[in-house]
Length: 535
Ligand code: AMP
Image 1: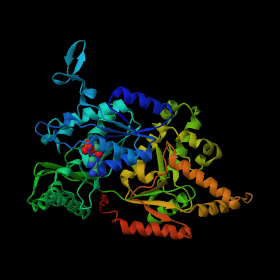
Image 2: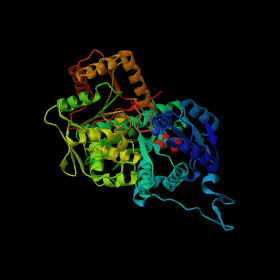
Image 3: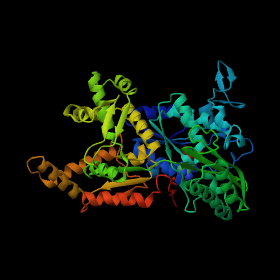
């Protein structure tokens, strides 16, 4: 692991990383790392080749009189921790490195004169709600630093925690408005066993305050249950939280508000989703937390290694549970078919993207479990056309283009917003639908997968093959799938592993259907996302 304190040094190193063809994942932090940060860093490490963690206690996001001076700082411990996790680069600049230095604090030298540095500002409407009115200047400071850091690091992917939901919404919007070419991924809030969201500021709490702080997550949970029982009114949901918090005398509530999670517009009623957020003081320590209340039919994500039977199982599960099989493979095939039809050269990424971007892709459930979902592109039924050898030969080339993948993942996520789908792949539960209600990691032992492959080959009339050789090939494929730059195979922390050795197809499908019923509330009500707890 290497530590850089200057933009110039970091840029040289990143140029070297890129020359090797490595992808870059970026986790901006203020240090004092805890289990919440670990989750972001681990995710970056799993999904990209080179993880950069920035450690920068940004003075601009601390309003006057707040805890800038006493904010916990321990660069040596943080660096050791990042190294232990497997991050490759730490960027720990001084404020002057980002903003320029002069006698008055921050400012740029320009032609001998000092001027204020250029600033990036969040949209004013996002600053009228939640924390912003209570922390004047905070999100202006956050937005400015994050955009500056994204511009310096230029990562393929950047990771932010859902705990800081207002920050996440602002960063997403700014990155999109400013056309910053980065994939912003959010990571579910990591909690202590009591439910308290992990935070660097938890270090300020006495043990009594820590116990009292558990009421924050508990009160949000209560609102979640009320939402599950059909409550949609903002006042009612916020009052529930306030009432619960009021039972703990150590807590002083700053706000409880319901807004749209993306636009942050205040909501009187929840239509499809709402972010219920609160800020609470315990002594001088200010803690925030939130919960996403969302009404959608469930999403089932099935990942696993090649040869575990994912596609057959997924099709059957969709049919049994009345869900749409979101056949992501068919989507990649459909766009490949379109590109081949239009005669665009497959290595001309820009033309390929221009061809695909305006295309309408639609998946319609199949009539029987053994048929694939019907696939339409620009209104044309291409269900059979996309399975010709010609398309099969070219689909991996098209789907390996990062821009194509980004576009299709965004479309898949739009299907996910409506819910009622089951999808399979290598990173469906970790990347495409990290908030899926049920995640299955479908796997089988190497010998079992080799036996199944041998049986398939035999059924295709191929000469018998050596099982040991097949096992070797499958093991190599597993290694490749785990380390590939695009969509690497990773098991989500909250996925249920299902080992299918000695299980028939019917038994596997039944087991998933059973898990679905056990884990999920009926589609007419809402779900409460299971919290991720860490010691
Ligand atoms: P900070 O160091 O507090 O600026 O946080 C750096 C990143 O870690 C931000 O994207 C936070 O949202 C994220 N983060 C902080 N606490 C948690 C948590 N408990 N769970 C998940 N992410 C978190």
